[in-house]
Image 1 (tube, rainbow, N blue to C red):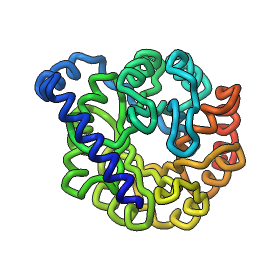
Image 2: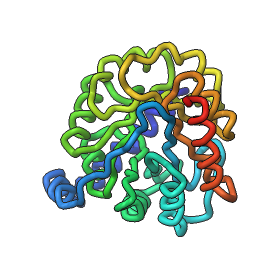
Image 3: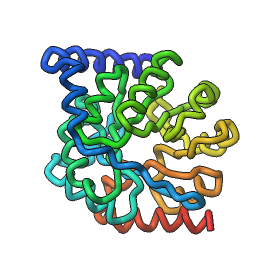
Image 4: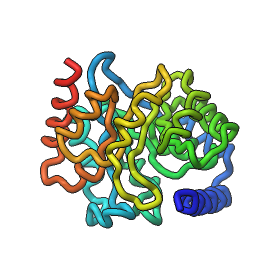
Length: 271
């Protein structure tokens, strides 16, 4: 079922690339991207703990998280002011109600803050990395299970050419084993998503079970299922350097305060 879900997302993603290519060639897209301001770099504390705060309007598991996109820019600045190291933006349109326009809005809102935007999507083609760069992103998320080693290397090389950091996403022990091929890439983050893609259920026990499987080098990111400051403390204790938090922040009435509390909880453990 996991492969079916990812295969469906990959097929839809490939279709979006073909449609986009009919409207703008890769050469023109790259030229447009080259005229954008330099990507903002993610600043990660050497001994601290950081959070990538996420903006998404809906998820397949939780349904609608926000009524519309009208507050996206405001939320991005709120995250930055609360201490986020980066702001992740869902751009997948069918299951997550996202768009590249959302990424543009966030990138514009964050310009000058020192906080980069990151495109989160089911990316399968280098064209989509350049789309992210042209929309003002500073980074992209790439999913190990969706790409062969050769395809992944091409995507990582494209991201480096575009000046973007990469969050490489793993779901299981085999993904983490494969990630060793890419662990020496400058600017790479390695994330573990604890969601079971077969059932869409959260399995937070994976954070502890697989903490020892990470290769040395890349900062470790805990993804999915982190809803409280106590959850963040736990993954910080397990050795994770960052957390990616989306649904909990989107559903909270005061996401800035929640983000600040989570950051404090993670950093207290490290101190």
